[in-house]
Image (cartoon, rainbow, N blue to C red):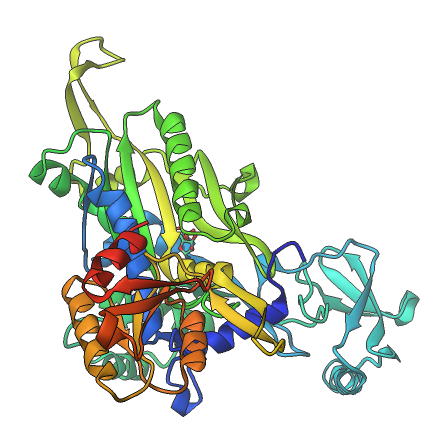
Length: 544
Ligand code: GAP
């Protein structure tokens, strides 16, 4: 495996995430909701810290970017203009044998003349699939271990069982199911990735029943399209990306803040996609958070700005990493490019399953602003009085800005840093016994708890001193936690797993020497620090 982390480690990270309160399965007590996750006390802090760092670097540290916090539900015409209503849909198919549901456009496409072998997960299923096919399609495939043989792809529209005059033929859809390679498939159905809901006091069910009663002649596809049209009248959608509001509000933001091109609008928040395949824990889920910025530039300058943001974003991700070598950028091939982009890079991470996307940095041309002008009639262009119009040669140039869009996943970023920070070390105690220390080496700025304050024992004035230190750290804005549960060694290990960079221990000497021991999570070195200097000491160490 290319990554420094194995699939087995991924399992350990998922279980640590639950054990230490980073990520829980949503609605777990009811059996869980597929691909929905809750961020627990430490996960909420980690996600918030990551998003705050993004905001700091994209908005607060720059004069040319301003923020936006738009509503999740927008006018449905936004999604018509952006192409999400028409194009943000996948053709879905069911395998009639294994019941697997998959995307037709991603399915394997065997060559004409090839044998279509159905490969079953085990011998029991091979028997059961063989019987099902016999019953439903009237052909008995030959079973060889876990494989079913006897089908051949005749041409692009037909496959057969047997040869010659006795051959039985079946319509072929152009692909087979990814899991077992079966050509016995349902019709394709379009499936929109946007979550649809209704806005206002609309009795959709009542409307639909009256409509169906009034039109008994409508059946099948006709009935489906009529119902679809009816529902669309009051339908609104949960945004599938945060990006569109920044195009729609381009003129308002530019004018209210007197922004001059080049400038950017940044937004972070929830997005929703009814993903068919949800995978790898929080990597791909239906509800997730994004951190996106639309950077508006003069036409013709997009290539240099794309390069600027490509390198800036890659460096940003690396700056919090334990393993910067696990981050890279990859340029999209021509056939991967979205229809609106003239070039695109992905920031990729070397996950336990290999290199995969973390952020997309697209050169989106003037596609979005032009589409919204076309659909809304609003003017979303920009006038630069200092520039000459390249067409007329006159002073003053009105143009539609081009856009560079760094679009990152915040929840995916949480996964990346959990994977990146996880490590196991062998440590030897004073008696020479080895044990495994699990550490989340999170960057101090991302770490949920900055310092744990631990009285060595729960008596002799130690808890009181510890509480005083916690209060002084909290008053300085550092998320500190008082912890007196279990023996000191166990507490250290607990905070190593939680990614807490420092443990401050109040011991028997503290009352007399007015000092405490500060233990560094990574080196495990311990330093004696005066109680009244602990806050300054930690402030310095934490703002690395
Ligand atoms: N506005 C462009 C846009 O949304 P995208 O590549 O579809 O582009 C950007 O999404 C980022 O959002 C991705 O790189 C990924 O980090 C994150 N993302 C997209 N879909 C996701 C999902 N289903 N679950 C978690 N993160 C997702």
